[in-house]
Image (cartoon, rainbow, N blue to C red; front, top):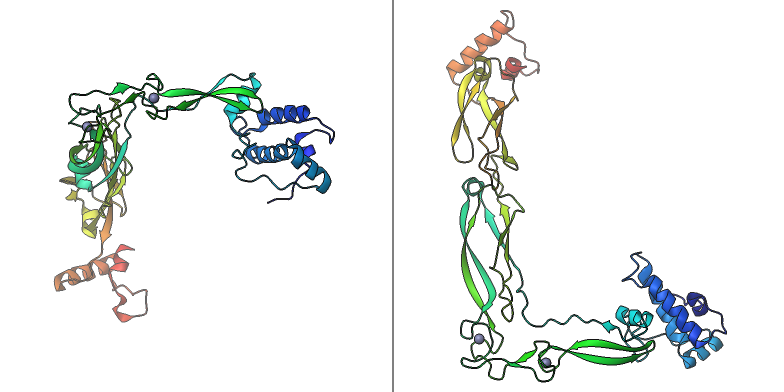
Length: 377
Ligand SMILES: [Zn+2]
Ligand SMILES: [Zn+2]
């Protein structure tokens, strides 16, 4: 624990302050620094100090000990609540104090119909499946409305009855005395747990829950053009709601297996095509593999190595659209590692011609160094 600050200083009161003054000072500070009201990052720490000081100074015994020894056995437990004299952190309580008490400090009680949870699943696809779209079977384990009782939770022929304790409201008012006066809190009815109704003859299939857990295989269609991180939402394929509430949704996160042949940017693809040197020099029409099909690429005579061509519409489909991205093809020179005797002869002749009639001198000292390098340099 950090060294204690002067509690009087923390609350901004004098050592002779009355209990009323201390209480007033605390309320003002709580309104200023309660982390639910104050977004500053150190508001929580400040509120902790304020609570700590108040716990001691509001208790005459602890205050006397603090005045005498400069310490009071520190407050135990959570800084925001707890103990017999604690609970100062509850905002509803502080608010009802500000508004003179009697205000409803609402406690969220889930009652009546409510929506089922959303579910999440993953699916992986290849680039070919991205191009065409894909069908998948997804296994989900989910709550579904009980078919036996049709979701009521009551045995066939019986119906849930209104809870007599809360008259069907599901919540009960509870009057609490607090330091700041009386306040009224709504709590879930202990008999019906906030449902407002009681099932005397529970459905044996779902034990009165109205829902039961079922394993299902769902056939889904993944649209073309999906990408890593694409999420599909399947409405009403999540968990069943309670008491007739709506069903949640199923979200499927997609991931795409990397295809070594292509780089991908949304619907555009990038690939590299190796062609022999004469193809670039003389020009030609060559076949390029896209994901699903081949495309013809016309290489004009005199094309530089590493030039990038764009085949419009040869990429992937855009998700949810009819048009497609492009295939960008970078042509690189294919350097043969092995030559036939004829190829060698022709290349050597070419090298001599390009060197004004003399055999080229290899740049490296090795005699075998007279190679293609000189040709393409
Ligand atoms: Zn049932
Ligand atoms: Zn009840």
